[in-house]
Image (cartoon, rainbow, N blue to C red; front, side, top):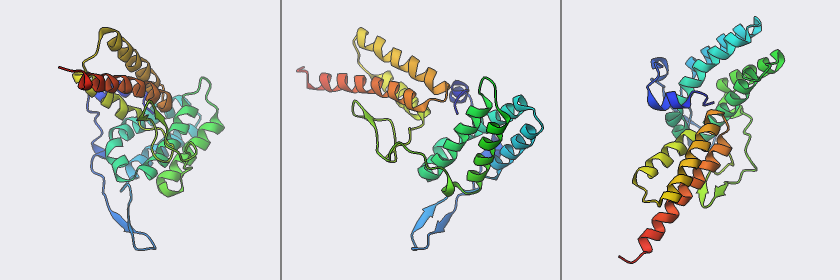
Length: 222
């Protein structure tokens, strides 16, 4: 999902087509309002094009087209996830499966087709996603959450931003700074490899160390 993470963080990708989402509210049968993700047709168009390319046998070109999806999806992540993290997660799960199939050492056409078909289906109806979650329980490492309440790994880009922000103001001994830098490096590597859960684990360890040292400094007599 984040093979081009660093580029996305440093520059604004030219994805104007995805910047104007039509946010709307719909009522559930009980009368309560739930927030949808809005108009996802631009994303659906990219997937349809990738499906067409893949069906013609050019899996390399299909992967390149899906990289466009990846860039746009990551750019819109904060906005969409804030609207409805569950629906966003259903699409994100399917997105990861499709990309993993395309980026395998030797992509298998049937697996690529299944992944793209599943992604297209969940874009049509995000509520019918796989809903894959690690037992529906939030996971913490050293007191830092690495999943949401449903057990789905948090977007590693967001945890990366948080770690970097806290590193700016952190007062760390040299040895602790080396450890945090190591967690940052390893977490970024895993994040770029689409491994959110392991990336989050590294970032959480870095955050935990920073916050532990902050508590120690707070309690230390002046």
